[in-house]
Every structure is written in structure tokens, then in C-alpha cells.
Image 1 (cartoon, rainbow, N blue to C red):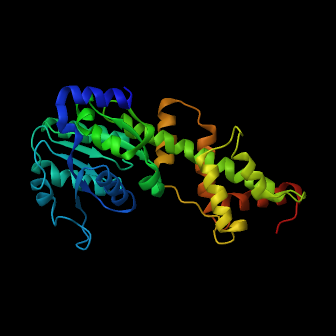
Image 2: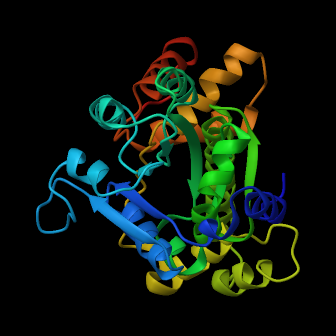
Image 3: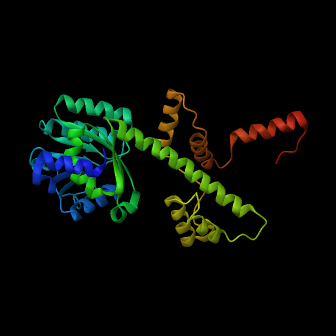
Length: 307
């Protein structure tokens, strides 16, 4: 359902109360802190919790829950895995029926399905929200892909509206589908970044005196490869021409691996995304053991020189 349709539906069901929400935000890091600020700017109230006593609004999750009037909306914005699991385990017994938990981190979609089922048994709603926008989201807004029951999405819709950039909200399906969609989104992101990196390397390797910044700048306008990632590459080159301040080392945060794992389960050939993931693994090797084997074998069967 489109964002405007949800807003109109929400207004029909709940009246003027949807103009304002008071929510709890657990996690006030780079993403959570910026999101809390954007929500407040939209006229809503945020009670924040983080372990740092200098930043937190309340000192415990119990106090956070007590600061919210039921039915409560609690947004979790902490790292995926053990941190998210720990927060949900701690806060679950503190919540009441009809409260709502939103996980906006990059959780594995199967964990989200399991957590949603567990909370639903307590009659607590659960939404898994894939959030994209990074450090630019505070000013530019975020892209939101959410999974959960329609009635729960309606409750949280004023917050989604506050966070999303125009036309950047979608209720993509039931619990788990938001994080599944974000997982695939991040896999695609891997492939796009790798393609831009390889294009830059080809331009740099040419014997022709190519003005690379000018070439990339013109790609940004009217070209079929124009994108926000290309915009960011041009910005990075303005700050550091030649990228001399950056090592060719790229970490992966998990979503690319999950995407490839799920592709194996589903029998979907992900040629580009898989190659982009493996390229990141290669970037962390000072010397590739596999290529040592190749060099040794070429020497053995053909007498080719080794370095």
C-alpha cells in the first residue's frame, strides 16, 4: 500500500491522535541519533535510551517503558545479532498487549520472523524495518522497507512519514519481509559499488590522458549509470583526488553474505553480487595464497618464471 493510502487509512481509523506520537528509541548512535532528531523535528517526542549516561534520556529500559503511554511504540536501533537479541529479551517482559516494537537495524530476516512470532505470543506487535540512507539521512531522509501486519504499520505510520524521503516508504509484506528486502538491497549495493570501482580502475589504467573527474561528472547527468553512489564517488574524489588516503581494503557487514547464502538456498544465480562479495574478501589479503599455488603450478608444468 502506498504511503499516502496508509496515512488516510490511519486517519480514518484513529483520528487526530495520529498527528503526534511519543516513542522510545533504543540506540542513539550514528543512525539512531540522527533518526531521533529527524522524528523530533517532525513534531513527535522521542525518549532515547543508550548505555552512555551522558547521552541517554533514561537510565534503564524499564524507565523508558514507564515514560511511554500505552499502547507504546519502541524503536530498536542497535547492531544486529546479539545486541538486538539482548534488547528484545530484556524489554519483552516490560511491554503490554498492543504495544509495538520496531527493529530498524540490519537484522537477519529469519531472526526477525522468530522475534516477531515470540512477541506476537505476548500480543505485542513487531515490525522489521529495513532502513537505508546512512549518515545523510538526517537531512535527506531515509528509504524505508517494512514488514509486519497492516494494523501495526498504521500505528507507526506517522514515524515512518517523519523519517522517509518522498516516495521512499513501502510496506513490502509480513514480518521478515522488510529485512529480507533490505538484505537484497545491500547485496545489490555491493554489486553497484564494485562496478563503479572497476570502472574507475579502467579509466585510471588507460594510457590516454583521461580527465577522470570530468568523465565521472558527466556520467552523473543524463547517463544510464547515474546514481547516488556515483555522486558519492565524485564527492570522495573531490576530497581526495587519486584516493591516496584510502587503502584498498573493504569490510563486509554481513548482508552480502546473507544474500549469497539465501541465493544458494533458493537456487538463484547471483553472479555479480557473489563476485562483489568475494572481491571484498580478496581486498583484505596482503598476498593471495591461491595465486601462490597458481604461480607454483605454472612453474612446475611449464617452467614459467616465478617472482
